[in-house]
Image 1 (cartoon, rainbow, N blue to C red):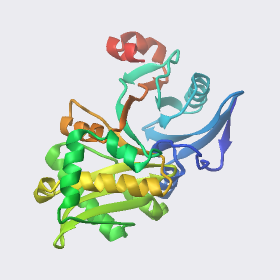
Image 2: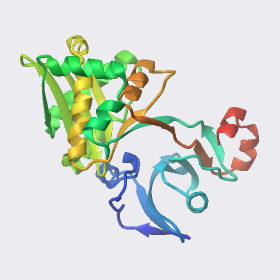
Image 3: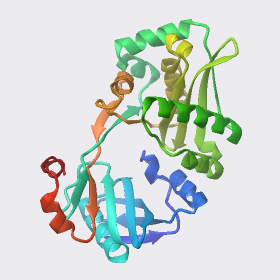
Length: 301
């Protein structure tokens, strides 16, 4: 098995996370963020990995987020970047035990909605509360539409979300990165809106990275919440994405401690919740530092 440099990240034939897709690489290139694309193969598997390069004073750090890596590939990647740059942080898609790694964060959980099922099967899989809310929204006066946003429309959407983030105390993918995706791959963004008598009640922004898509943000007004508009928009988005050949709808992190209401909403769709791997750090003195790592983090790794 060997790592080899690639001129560009290949388009995957199966669902991968946004952070490991050519759409994300194109946004990084637009922003001038240093990154490397590496291919790998062994006797059984093959794949590619996107590694961002960050600078912290004299230290350069490689960051590989949501990467599908075998233990051997991860070890080779860590060796290459710690020799060339000094340090590497990896958050693998699944649990991966690597000797010499320092766990710096326990595994997060994500909700993934399987869109390969029929619409009838997806509807049967949602929770009773979600189905009831959806029926209410479908029988009401809400009108929905989906469209690729202009830059001005996107700025308005992101401004609404920024105000929501400040009010609710959470953070999402930086707005400048979303704008970079739009500049590099405008077809990758799709907005869903719900209106009633011309008034915007709710909207959802999705990022397409075929054959997957990511739910980036959702906003709703008080009247939109009463009308269950977000349920209708998420259901509409799932159906439209499935018709476009999207196989997996990534609903993002599930944080039952920080955002229990949002976590319950994502789970109610019937999406599968699964853990990612822990964030692992490789660099100078990691062997020594690992002795002092929190026991729960070490156990998680």
